[in-house]
Image (cartoon, rainbow, N blue to C red; front, side):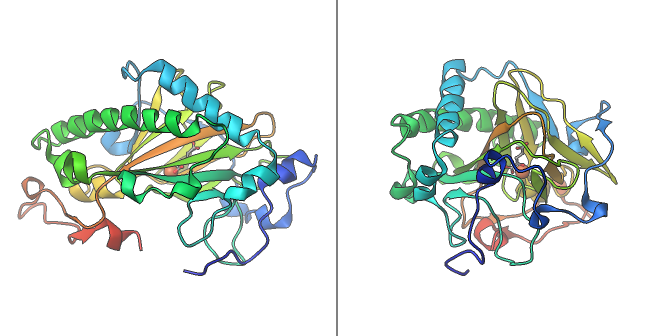
Length: 310
Ligand SMILES: O=C(O)CCC(=O)C(=O)O
Ligand SMILES: [Fe+2]
């Protein structure tokens, strides 16, 4: 992986704050990839969608409120101060505005901060921000709550697959092996949201993602259902949950790691905090043997998460 980006990085916030009235060429998508129309979800189950929302989740509301506050405060800092934590393609840890090093790539309308959270030995001390001063403490407390919620969700998903309740937690490495990271994404207002995207289509490569939106609850996440992009309507106070590729593998394809993307928005800025609960890097991840049979053969070969994400 190259040590640096192919171009000078201009934060999207800098473009947006400059009062620009058009989207620069590098952000413009070909016609077929632009967001058109607006489809709203009809009811169906999680296995089909790979996405659901949880309410009454029991997560300490104060911890959630402080988490939103500190990260909003960080993104409100002057760009020059945030750039002190600029990331590189080597690890992506820190403040950044692009993913991938292809010089010709179309860029997304967002700036983000990526951080490894667990195991604590793998966190990078220089990437823990000193401003706001309580950011580390607040983020670590939030991590604790998210790990508890992840563990509950992994149990619930194991149950729906008729696996032992601890199956997914153990497959991810148990309480000492499981890993976690986070991406906080800031989507500044965009002058021409129909020409670009807040975030390109992707699946989450890890285990399970717990997404928290800012309290203005701006919609924007779209989930792909066959050939349609469906806009998710965020419920107040809910976490938006989606399963990643590793659960698709363990469930032998019963759960789908859904492709999703984010729309840009001309009226409102948006902040989202994605918490990724992932398997330990060196455990082979494979379809659960209970879900494999002559009529339902294994669809995936065992692969460690470190190999998978290369
Ligand atoms: O901001 C969103 O709605 C989704 C973010 C996301 O998909 C991600 O960070 O992987
Ligand atoms: Fe995602």
